[in-house]
Length: 191
Image 1 (cartoon, helix red, strand yellow):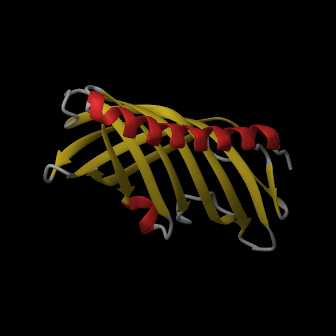
Image 2 (tube, one colour; image 1 turned 90 degrees about the vertical axis):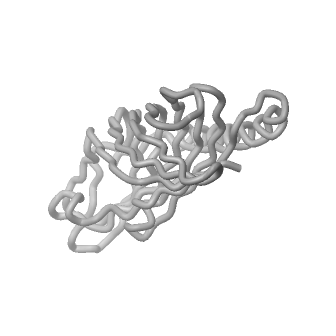
Image 3 (cartoon, helix red, strand yellow; image 1 turned 90 degrees about the horizontal axis):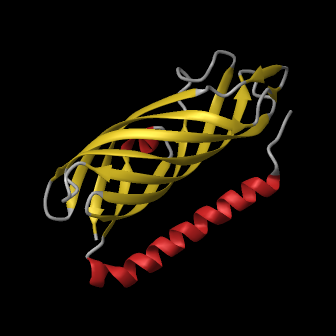
């Protein structure tokens, strides 16, 4: 079984934590001066699979940024035959562009994603860990329900660019897919 360098993984997680902290501190400081909007989002897909999702964001004009984390239990109909219980903890930093300066309507996003995953074979003898590093592109549409609450249906595609390959699970080899499509609905609150 091949593993990515633990130092790189630890540095990536530390970078994500510092980015989230910096975003919160900087947004709180500059919100009064520059009218930066901040908020939080939930995504329904992870909850449907028995997981969870949380994101914080900051936006101004046409631009925004998000830091998110999620736990997703991949449905078996998506997991290759011979494998089961593919559980993914996801961490991402995403930059967004809004076609409208008031951040309603269509948006485009892209960023870096880390998946810390575990998977079992159908024999369920052992659980094997793996990592994937992905580049994400997404598109969505913000529908305001009120001044504070909104819905955002979206679709995305993540390309696996690095990570653990040839993952030995019991007597089988699992290779994470190169293309990872997503489709879901976000529920957001402007703070």
